[in-house]
Image 1 (cartoon, helix red, strand yellow):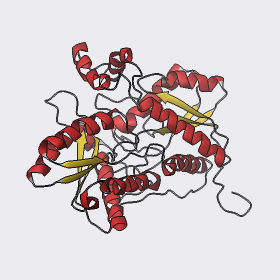
Image 2 (cartoon, rainbow, N blue to C red):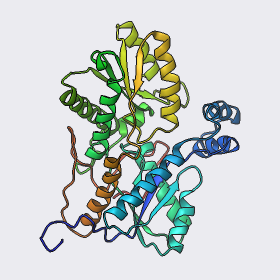
Image 3 (cartoon, rainbow, N blue to C red):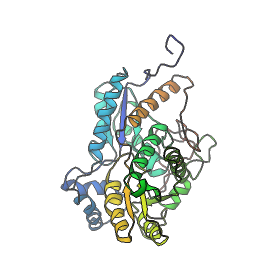
Image 4 (cartoon, rainbow, N blue to C red):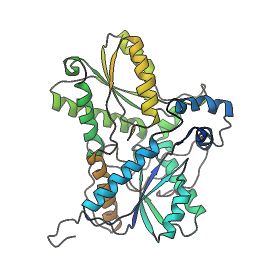
Length: 374
């Protein structure tokens, strides 16, 4: 606490670093197949199939934008921390490509880091979007004796710093359409996951995220954005939640509808204008620039729909400030204080520590950091 008795918004003790944890992506054509082999390791997917999937990357020179976007986020965080008087170095580690998480932890250890907050570039709860990151953290710590203690920050799909940039992006996109998008449908898009994984996301623990968390959280975020857009524009827009980037065996059910199928249905229903809102993504990485900007836009054109795409949060100053606020919030909690846990929409702020059995691994139980069942 500062001398006035109010919380010190620059106090990040006990943390001496922030780790930005992300998915990773290839940075040149020869990286593409090895990267996809990392992503799919243990699933027995033939190399020929990986080469087919890799064509998405080759359309963009064999380079995913995700690493550059994370570097831009880190630079923005470093500036924000400095502007706020926070002395906290920011590190970068990936699950599936360089800089690999274990290598980053080794560097942090060499630099004398003892305890770090971890910000994952995935806002929602499921095995693939949260617990798998925690499993990766466990694996990396096992590989680096003496690695820093790591505390993964809570999910942030309903933090104002994530929601507010989405609202402004939708309003800006609507302005690109005839009559400022008066008749536009808002189509919120996120990454599809297997239906079973979606149903088991969250926890039965009363202190955790109620199941099925993945869909509930997305619907809450989409509803909140749509409601705020109405306040800004004075117009109500129907909105939907749809999915992209389905993969895996055709026999395995995944969350639907697919964005392209949905656009075809909207055209049949006479919808003429659509705003695609990448509510499931924090930056314009491959699922956005290929699945939406390339594939979905082509579908919209084919079926006669005018479509525009809203921006993702990226390095919006409110999103950057949100990361800082989450670090300060968690640091205060770790010091035994009771910080305000900001959240908007229909669901409360999520817990710092995942509930027992939260978002189980579909292939069998595995240890993970930052959870009571670890």
